[in-house]
Image: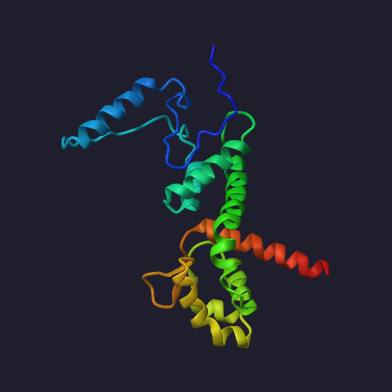
Length: 204
């Protein structure tokens, strides 16, 4: 009979997930720990992890990894949010996306609101940011962005970009005239903030 694990999130920044959450994988975890210790002592070792097709739920994991941008802090935020979304001890794509949405709001309120939104007092800058957030996730082309802007926004766009890059919100890509949010979770929060702003305006 499988022991029930208390409903307490294992995702705490700076701490690994407790081993008891990896059900029936003690031997595998111990093998990985030995390999890590050997590598740390200078004896490199390669480990291959494999399983039956579909066992890893790659679509779900890919979404969580993509939106974390590879940042451990954001992965912890997403992992914790997804953990609380799950109700049947089986994390599926719906759980992952629900958790990602919640994590985006949480990260936005904790980091982007005080560090970005409160820093840019200009309503023109806020409007540009909202419009950029509404583009499909991924790379953003300057030409398409400018087409969505008013004349005033177009004139201030370069200064806006300089500010956003300084704040770590937006970066250049390898292609000239192409930009991207530093991670997808930021873009998702900007999109959510834009929707909230639109609702508030339409409700007035």
